[in-house]
Every structure is written in C-alpha cells, then in structure tokens.
Image (cartoon, rainbow, N blue to C red):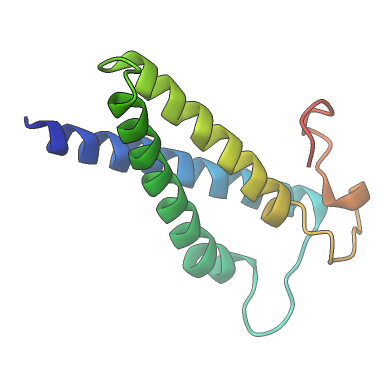
Length: 125
C-alpha cells in the first residue's frame, strides 16, 4: 500500500467514524432535550443532508491536513501525526457539537440551554 493510499484510507476511516459519532451524539442530545426543528425539514433530514456531509468533509480534510503537516514538519512517521490528527478532530467535533448539538436559537423545553444532562460540565458548549 503506497503512502498516499494509506493516508486516504486512514482519513476516510477515522474521519468517517468521527463524523458518524458526532451525528450520533447530536441526535441523542436533540432527542434528550426535545429539540425540534420546525418547517418542512425535521431533525432527521437535517442531520442526514446537512450534518452528515459537513461532519464528514470537516473530519476527513482536517485529518489529511494535520497528518501531512506533522509528517513534513518532522513529527514522526506514524504515531505523532496520528495523535495530532485525532486531537484536531476531537477539537473540531466539540466545536461542531457546541454549535449544532446545542442550538441556542431554539427554545429549551427540557434542558437548560439545550445542553443534555449527560454532557460533562467541564467540557464547554
């Protein structure tokens, strides 16, 4: 497997898994807090047609960019670029969850500020 193929494989697998994980957490938070998107598009189609492409593109591109930058900068051959890319994806997904998973513009019928009760207090939203 060539070097470019390995990067593509890792970026698709890890970025894709992180994207689906972000959507799962967002859907769970919306369900637990009673967040309902109004209009012709509901929660499911919004996550499928907007959330899924955004999260996949952000995670896959971010993984590829951080991996390449760390390898070129002398960050090691495999382990340190992988750790750096995972940390970058975690930070980006926390930011995306804070923006989309806890929508401040919608009424909070169950949870204060649409933050679910299971979300750790030490992680800001």
